[in-house]
Length: 109
View 1 (cartoon, helix red, strand yellow):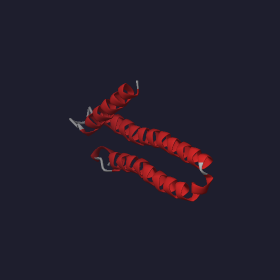
View 2: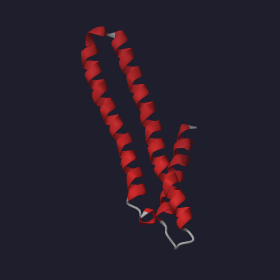
View 3: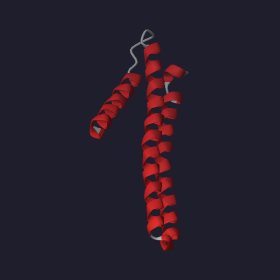
């Protein structure tokens, strides 16, 4: 089920980006603007969803590791913080993509 939902989300994002960048004239400008806004929202939403799940899983593993071996809590905490920073950077990439879609588009002025 997870693979199916990931595939559906990937296809939706590809189609939304293609629709957002296809401009055929003034009649399609409103549709393209809506597609750009949807693609921008999806880029942030999907990135935040995936990173939130990843962060929760990472913190769960770190808490379990510290509970099993309290002497290693320093090393586990440092590794967890580095991992969380790397996961958070993926959310920032989604934000950058949405800002590019919103502000580097000729339809928005």
